[in-house]
Image 1 (cartoon, helix red, strand yellow):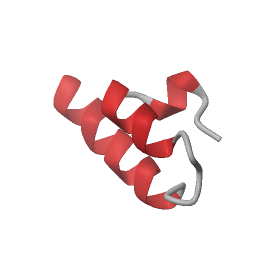
Image 2 (image 1 turned 120 degrees about the vertical axis):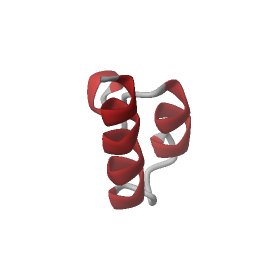
Image 3 (image 1 turned 30 degrees about the vertical axis):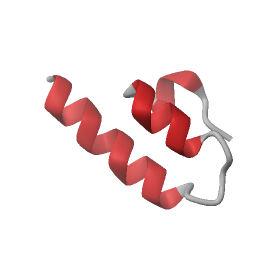
Image 4 (image 1 turned 60 degrees about the horizontal axis):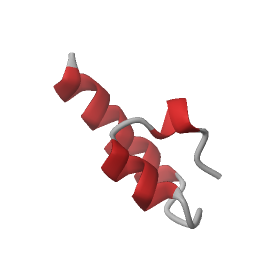
Length: 37
């Protein structure tokens, strides 16, 4: 489950690479849950 969430985080981070909080949220593990800009 965690691996899946991390993969999703990586994909979301790539999509929102322009967002300043994308990398930080991806490091946290779940940008969708943290609501990365």
